[in-house]
Length: 339
Ligand code: MG
Image 1: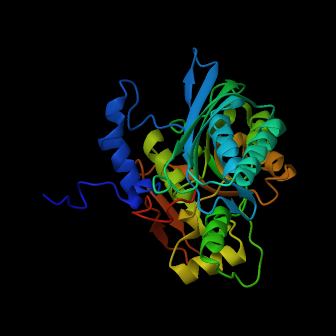
Image 2: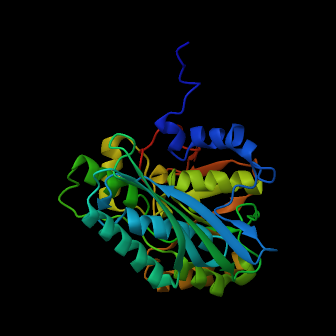
């Protein structure tokens, strides 16, 4: 029998939206005897909560792009997921699947990027794995990193910890990574501008946020695949709250907004690799915002909304016209192989 679209994995299943969420909940969680739909954090706490661990695979295309490459992405992506639980990444494993014929010089560049990103944060690569597959069995190189960090935040920020009245803060303009990758892949000209991926480690920004907000820092989440829309929906669901944002207060670069209009996409659904959303208690919101704005990765930080008491899982945006629209989990295939 020919498989139907319901019987096979599609690129959309990797998009970070509804399809991926359903795949995880309906199929993949069966592998675990401890994880659940409401416990999908960026990193898991282990060793009585002293350590956080996270793993992530990277398949980005092209491998080298404005603002970074797959090596920097693979290091920073996992560093960020560990940092989102209020932990300082210390150890990293790096597993590579390399295609036969891959240029050694490109591999060296990627390895240098991993090392530079790790050195910047005091992270040590302590183990790894290398596999080589035939020419048609992969596309260049795929990298999987696993990071372990020591927790410094108490309590650990959690997707399930947002409470009504809390404020929602982002550290800067949304959508740079996704649009920069797309532009590099399609050789799109974005008005002659040199838009760069925001690929960066969020560790020191996270330390600044926790330093300013203390136990008032409820939730931290990096807004990767599925962008801000996916992150906010996951938080609203895990915390059993509603979230309301002011659409006009969300920073987006002019060229990203323009590209999104051209492509019929929402900047809220585009992947970032150096942007996080922080949900913090109202009494620490101004201090956290100020600390973020003092950091080089938070100059355009903004309070974009708050946690409401509405229907659990609902995320909405108030528009400039005073109307309200639903911000849903992105539906299907957004941009494949963005990270
Ligand atoms: Mg994450």
